Length: 93
Image (cartoon, rainbow, N blue to C red; front, side):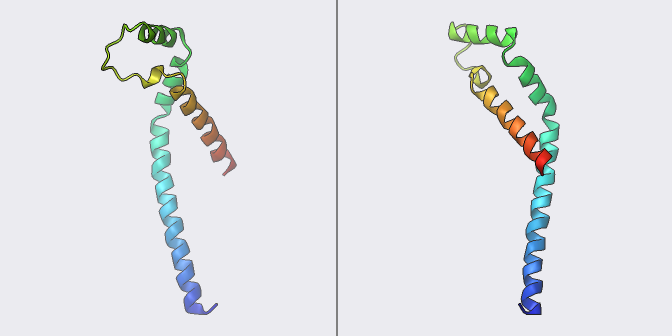
């Protein structure tokens, strides 16, 4: 590889790496900022309160226009599973 080609290749590598590091830093800041939300969701899911909210939804006692993704049995579970996998990945990296 000639000098010019090597320098151009390394410049591309530097640009890609710098961009990835910056994007990851922003993503980690965002992830850190929602840790309280994740903890609250973890405590809510499967609690007596969640079970009552779920039962009331099943009984049609909640307003029809109320967004209720948190009452889906899969949405919080999937999020918490993703969090566990991400945390393991971060430990590995």
